[in-house]
Amino acid sequence: MARRREIRPGEATLWLGVLLDAAFDPTSKTLNLARSAEIASQAAQDQGMTGALRLTARDGQSQLLALASDFVNYPEEYGDRRRAELLLGWVERWMQPEDWARLQARVRKRRSHQMLF
Image (cartoon, rainbow, N blue to C red):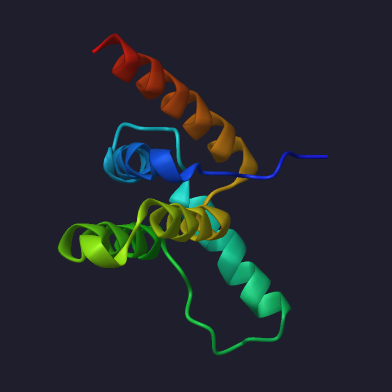
């Protein structure tokens, strides 16, 4: 049984940075948004939603950028807990289990890097 995904509120900013890097770095193999979009589009069709829009990797990037923009532009409305919840919602929609494992490794690496400084 897979462990439940979790983003600790105090690490929401760290996770946002890792997610943005993974989503927008063209050389990164950490996150496969195109595959997640295919899976979500197929699931919508399987549920009989024939008029559903086909999702693309760009949709995932746009949603992540929208979250980041809201966090920056309205910081008083997004405490650590709320940011963690919203990022986790994005992760649940756009990240496959193997992507999650790779992203966790990146977060651990950044965490240890931050402790050095």
